[in-house]
Amino acid sequence: MAMSIRPRRSVLYMPGSNARALEKAKSLPCDGVILDLEDAVAPDAKADARSRIGEAVAAGGFGAREIIIRVNGLETPWGHDDLAMAAAAKPDAILLPKVQDPEQLLVAGARLDALGVPRTVALWAMIETPLAILDIKPIAQSSLNPLTRLKVFVLGTNDLAKETRAALTPGRAPMMGWLMQVLAAGHAYGIDVLDGVWNQFQDTEGFAAECRQGVEMGMDGKTLIHPGQIEPCNAAFSPPEAEVVRARAIIDLFDQPENAGKGVLQMDGRMVERMHADMARRTVALADAIAANA
Ligand SMILES: CC(C)(COP(=O)(O)OP(=O)(O)OC[C@H]1O[C@@H](n2cnc3c(N)ncnc32)[C@H](O)[C@@H]1OP(=O)(O)O)[C@@H](O)C(=O)NCCC(=O)NCCSC(=O)C[C@H](O)C(=O)O
Ligand SMILES: [Mg+2]
Image (cartoon, rainbow, N blue to C red; front, top):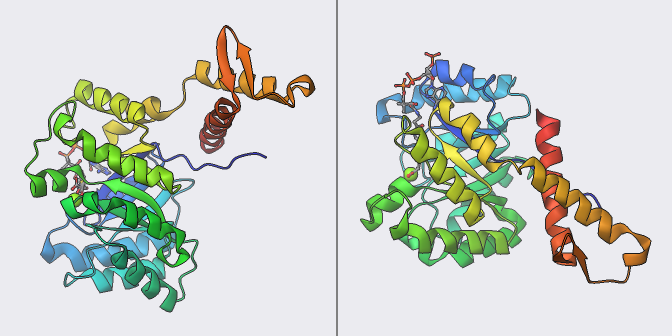
């Protein structure tokens, strides 16, 4: 059966207070856009930003890009108004900051149900506190309850650095264990995991290295802060053409009638098992979805 997959290679944050940036979102080649009401928007600008985002999302025009609204936490003075705006605007997803307990997702999900928001509007969770890392399995497991609408984890490496006092270094050695824990928990429950942002947006080499590292770790994509990061990020997170060709060959090999009952075969001197055919189907589905959105 054909696998369906939503590319989330490049997901760009835009401050909701920046009208020009919101308009730009309609033409940028990113897979998703996070319209931010949280950290990128000063307290005095939050009400205006909320109205601007509500109007922009309701008006549409974003094409195949996935539209996500990042609200303020429901424990802040702005969170409930943000959620009500997002409920009315119906983006593809609502991103909750600083999730560190399944209860936060259950509360937000129940509120969206009460507001009559269809469950096709997902909840995404920022993982950016030490408690979230320590409790990542129950948070991921809560996605089994449809009330939570949980589909994606977004790593907030800046907040994680602030809260843990770990340094954000090239190579990210101090954080690697935590990031891999989030990936293991997310992927165990079918949740996509998006890497954190690279702050030094003019350092293109450092950014490319961090993208490559994210791919090797198993990230589904990366969150971005500047339009200049989109194309290199898309390139890094797209399966290379040679890998797609090989993936199609593995699928064809297992589809041959003479191989129907076989669990292991050889191709070009390499062992391939049915698990490799499953991985190949994912690669092909991702490549096809990227091509369909191009
Ligand atoms: C980082 C920036 C403040 C840099 O802004 P600026 O100096 O204006 O950049 P440029 O002059 O190079 O901009 C060139 C043009 O591109 C537009 N632009 C810039 N950034 C964006 C963007 N994010 N989305 C859309 N368009 C953008 C500029 O308007 C210029 O356009 P034009 O005038 O037509 O030429 C800035 O890039 C920025 O604000 N970035 C986003 C910051 C943000 O959203 N931060 C919050 C999310 S990060 C975070 O919180 C992660 C997590 O929670 C954690 O804890 O880690
Ligand atoms: Mg943060």
